[in-house]
Amino acid sequence: MVLAVAVHSLWGGNAVAIKIGLEAFPPMWTAFLRFTIAVVCVVLWAWFRGIPMRPQRSEWWWLVLLGVFFSIQIGLMNIGFDHTSASIGSILMATNPIFAALWAHFLIVGDRLTRQRMIGLFVAFLGAAVVILQSDRMDGPMAVGMGSALVFVSAALLGGRLAYAGHLLQRMDEVRVVLWQMIISVPVFGVVAIMTESIQWEHVGPGPIVGILYQGIVVAGLGFMLLTYLMKRYSTSVITSFNFVSPISGVFLSVLLLGDQVTWHVLAGVVLVGTGLYLVARHVNK
Image (tube, helix red, strand yellow):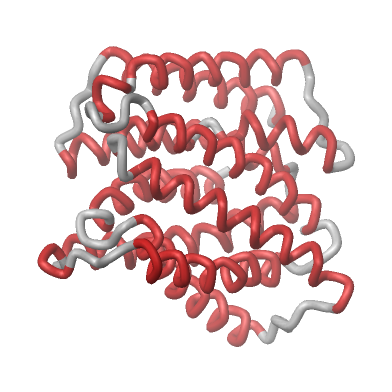
């Protein structure tokens, strides 16, 4: 429980780090730099522990599929964050357990939905709906609600990816699952970034650099490793349901570091999403 809360607290700070990094590094460059750093971190960790990093022949297809899933989800998330606030983005990304629980119901043996868990997930979904319906006021006139919609789609894909990763973790080591989804995605992000984006060098400074390092080392490196460690040993939907901590952490840090406004729909979203996911976690851990 302590590790699960810690991981999702770190993920709350990821929204702020992305927004700060985007001041200089566009979405695809942000993803490329973030996961290049993360790959180095995970490789060093695997080497230190003596974990084989080369997939077995039977694992390649599943890891390639995971890498494609991963690339699309992260790309949509970064583009969405570029057009919405960190507080709204952190709330919407926290809804991924809704979709993780739904997918886990079909993909993972013994990880089934119950009526009380469904009620908790429905409450969380209502919180997301409140945020999306009101987010056009903060997304700006050039993207009326589009940024929030993309983040929400990314959250849905993240939930599916976590459930799929939980399925893979039943048959392969967690380090290979984490490492190869990143390795496969890095060239994709790099090619798209070179073809479509330019780094705003005049804005490169301590803030954006620290934002990229936080995303790469703390979230993508340490955070993903801790999350997959927990998912391999406990129910996927239980671990992801601790995400009720993430929107609270994300909104608090967004207000503190970025000066985001706390409007009624932001508060309602935090309360509903946090309450719904807490109900799921509380029910499962009785």
